[in-house]
Amino acid sequence: MPCKCGGTCETNLIYACSGAANTGLLADQVMRALNRDGVGSSTCLAAMGADLSGFLESARNATRNVVLDGCKVSCGAKIFQKNGVAFQHYVMTDYDVEKGKTAITGDLIEAVAERIEGLVKA
Image 1: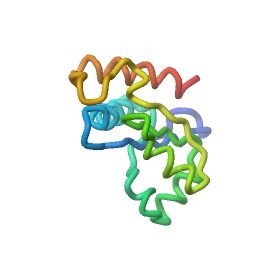
Image 2: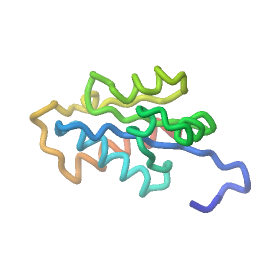
Image 3: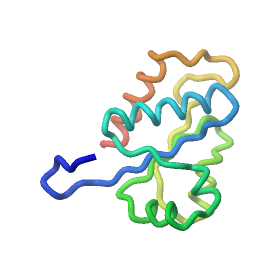
Image 4: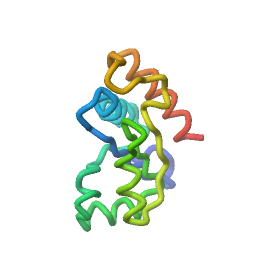
């Protein structure tokens, strides 16, 4: 993504749970919406969990790591904690989404993405 900020660009990396539940699907789709809207770049949470050095280095050098977990189990947050890497954490069930029950619609994806975008940019 080209820099549009006069040389003081931030590097926001976005990681999402893509778990088996509807909430993992929502986290993944919100990550894709935030990437599309230029909030940050999507990257691989599994690679962080596998301790792949290039991904760990990128995370350590990022301005902001945004971790989107589907539920309160917070696998993504635990990966970052284990590696001692700073992150902002958002859990899909904190947005009136019930695990295993709430239908994941385009409107829901956009609404959650907008709320998280506001928090990331704050």
